[in-house]
Length: 124
Image (cartoon, rainbow, N blue to C red):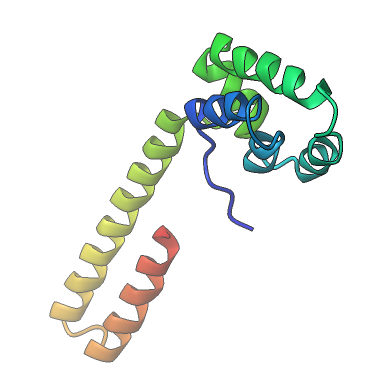
């Protein structure tokens, strides 16, 4: 299952909104549904509202690296974009090599198109 990168700002906003409305939305956002359910079940008490406020401050007090380590499996946005850039570059190089083979007549147009699509599918 593909996991999207979590934003520290959105998590903090959801946590602070839990002090006034339904508590626990930030837990669902951060991929902790059991904690989110617990917050909703205890919403008739002040406990989740206080916990949400404390967690909102905690999210903002962390630097991006600490937040990524805790909630994004240690992958920062810069690392992810660098990995994708390297992957795109290697696929582009492979497509250029395939095109050279096609122009030299070593592979057919059909084979080129099939292999090109397979390489492009690896990027996403």
